[in-house]
Each structure stands twice: as structure tokens, then as C-alpha cells.
Length: 283
Ligand SMILES: [Zn+2]
Image 1: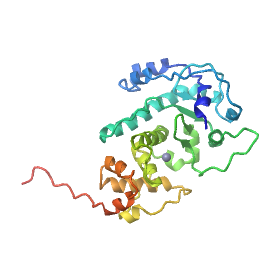
Image 2 (image 1 turned 135 degrees about the horizontal axis):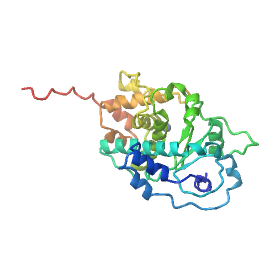
Image 3 (image 1 turned 180 degrees about the vertical axis):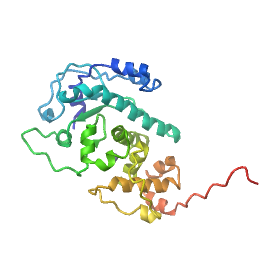
Image 4 (image 1 turned 45 degrees about the horizontal axis):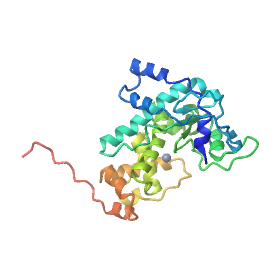
């Protein structure tokens, strides 16, 4: 779908000065923002919206550049969402840095569209006009989609659709955005060879530190590689628990590299558990 064209038509942010104020006030990392300011989108234009884009965000085309686009009903919350996007980018960047992985080139320019409801988001994804029914949801818990722009429902809609996940972190919505950014980043650093579904979904949960499945503890590699019912409510928790299981046996950098190969799961089954650390300083 031509998301670029649609997103380009609807930037009506009040501009970047509120973010600069927030930096001055210390609520946003000062080391982060100058880069973001340097990478303002340059694709702002005035191409008329295509008819099939009508189910998506529609604004008044004021054409002030921003990394976030919202429908008019959410325009007063634009700054809140812009700050969240900056924080989400930072979560992924810190993860990459701490694990010796490249930052990628696309995170800085990532854009976000926020929708007031699951239905509106899904209509946009499918370009379904208001007078028509969209196809069935891919899963009941559908609340966001990666890509650029990445798309998500509001924090309130997220909490309504998946309360058990939204309650796990005070900043659960920022981490939802980080999850989608993590997919974008993973796709880039792995040249789109992201491995099995359970691996890239579980990895995104781990990178975003969303907390899903922290109470699950697979007992063996076979247990961790059990098939997942993706229509189930706790599929993401199960995937994250599996990734955490293998992270105790290999660094994330190695897992990302090996996941690009067809024998990934066979290799995982043979991975020995890491030996317990020898206490240092003992003779
Ligand atoms: Zn995901």
C-alpha cells in the first residue's frame, strides 16, 4: 500500500518547539534530540489524497513537519505522542548499543500514525472506506503495525484491547511503539531474514522490555520451541519466554545471526546451557 503518499498529506503538527521546551525542561534526553531535529522529513507535499486513502487519518493539510500524524480528534495530543516516539526510538537504540549491534539507519527517521480505535487502524491498513466492511482482524489483540510510518492505536485503546499487557508497565504504550520499531530495526540489521515468527515477535517484546511472559519458564529447548497459537491471547508472552530461554544460552547478536539460517531451530536444540559463572577472586 502507498502509505508514504497518505502520510505525506496529513502532517498537521504544531511544530517542534514543544519538544525543544521539553528537552530544556529535562523530560527528553538532550543527547537524542539534535539528531532528530536534523532529520526532519523533507517529503512534505500537497499531493491530493487518493480516494482509497479516505479511511485513514485526515487532517487540514497545514503541512508543518512532524514525525507523528494523528486525526484531528487527537491533534491536542500530538506532543505527547512525539515524546513517546522519541523515547521508543531510544529504547531500541540503547538495546542495540548495549548488545554490540549496529543502530541501523532507519530508526531516526521513523514516523508514527496514531488511531483512536482498533477499527480505525484496521480500516486504514486495509484502505477500507467508511461505507464498506473491512476484512476480519488478523487477531483480536491487533493494536499496532510496523513499517514507516508505523501505526498504532491510542494508549487508551491499547489498554481496552489488551488490558493484561498494558498493565505490565507504566509506559506500556511507549514500549508498544518500541516493539514495532524493534521489528523495523531487526529487519534492517538482519537484511529482512528475521527467522521464525516466534523469534522475531519474542525478540521485539524483549527489546522493548514489555514484560510479557516473564512468569513463563520453558523447561527445555523442545518446550521453548513448542508451536504457538498466534490467535491466542498469550501468544506473545510465550514467544518472549522462548527468546528469553535461548538468551540464557547465546548472546542476542548470535541468535539474530543464526536466525537468518534455515537450520536455526536445529541449532537451538543443540545449544548447551551456559555453565554457571565461576565466582571471581577465588583461588
Ligand atoms: Zn510484533
